[in-house]
Each structure stands twice: as structure tokens, then as C-alpha cells.
Length: 114
Image 1: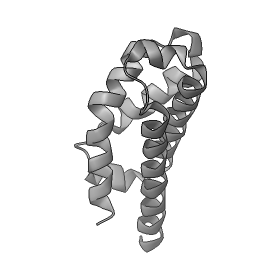
Image 2: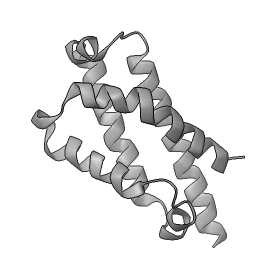
Image 3: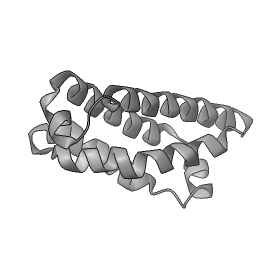
């Protein structure tokens, strides 16, 4: 059990670093139009969302059950959409997730490290 806790903690730390990268890649962009036009930032952001979803898949089932207020399945499903339907990605939707969902998710993750 202790190993699982340490592993989950390491994964959460990596997830927080990934979220920070997403914020860094998008911090200078004013809206979803600029986000879509900045190919490097767009691609880097999408890749980091994929990494974030992969990390969710590596968290222990016990941890995710205890933190059931977070919709882990939805986060992983978003990863699948990004990885397998790249040309079906809507930049405006991704932009909304960055602005509205990611800050709260980051805060939820930070609580686990305290």
C-alpha cells in the first residue's frame, strides 16, 4: 500500500508539472483563435493533455476511488479523443478546458501533495 501511495504521489507531481507546461504554452495567447494559429503552442498543449490523460491511467484504482469527486474517466476519455482524432479537435473547446477546468483540476491535485 505504501508503494502505491508513493507512486500515486509521484504521478500527481508529474501531472502538476504537465499542467504548468500547458499554462506556460498558452499564457501569451489571448483567445482560442490565437491558440489555433500558434501551431507550436497548440501541438505542445495537445501533447501535454495526452500525457495528463496517460498519467490518470497510471494512478491506482484505490486512489481514484477515494478521490471520486474528480471525473477521472472524462479526463482519460479526453486524452483518447486528442490522441486518436487529432483532426477532429476543436481548439475553442480545448481553450475553454484550459481556462475553466484546468485551474480547478490543478488545485484538486495540489491538495493531494499537502
